[in-house]
Length: 423
Image 1 (cartoon, rainbow, N blue to C red):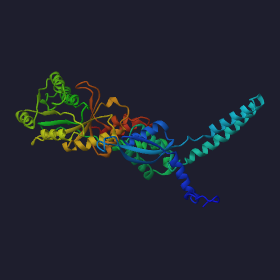
Image 2: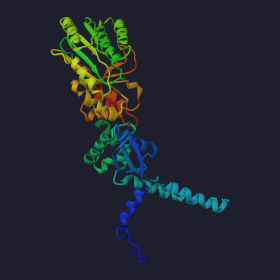
Image 3: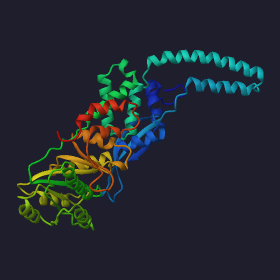
């Protein structure tokens, strides 16, 4: 009880609780569909001048509890940017000059003081630069790396894994060398990328593309077929016997689009509406076919019914299948996790990343694929068929990273032999 007779709070005997309570009172809240989106929004607004206090999943929307959607709610506080010694001195000098009318004598005195303090300050900065004192428990190099990975849109879980490795594998002395830390992290990212080695398969080789709507599967399947023909022409080899099937009967104009491309490349195209029709076409031509390409409709990852039906159509026994999952380079990390999970029932061998040229940050894709241990087979750009498709490589993926001050020629040489080309 206080002297005035009022009951005291716990904080009267525990100052720490007052600090915690004050932080809670200053806390702000941000809500987004994923935690990664929350962190990205905070970084864009405050850079590193914020601290996350807590996060949780909340349900919003719907009617009477039905149809609600999950949102991430993050509580945070904003930290004012630190005032550097230079800023502090400049502010003090300005105040002195203003109070004294900025006459010539006062100005000369200020200049002399300025020069002396600059000498002392340079000496202090030189000493402090060698100390690299951690801010709030994190080494400055780790903070910079986290910000760099955030700018490249790597997932929060991937960033946390890099942070743990830096703390466990690098000494404090090694962390002081930020240029070396960047090279280390750049190399780790390269090591995390899995590239599928494309090898010839015995005919009839069946290539199937699956994936959500809007990723460009039809154009990509035509690019794959066209590339096969162009490669044979360039090598002076006999043209392979290629055929295409579309089972995309849901999208208006899907068959017309593929039929035009097939006509240009002089590749026969069939339309199948059931598993029996796919099997009939396969049985009719399998003895003479080298490669059969199958284009599929795109469905939302939540459309389990239609995805299940498509799996039945493609479940033809005896097919030497090579299934690829097509995704766009700009897909959100959280969405990609759902897509990978839903389409795993097709036993896809690898991933084709489309629309590579339509985004400047690919950390979202690279981090999720690394965490799910999925390999990349091809990368596509634009709409031109059969051009603008290439075998995936670690070098191509690393070139897309922004903000790293590293000798990329060194890494191109290091990872050049780890491309998806045939041996």
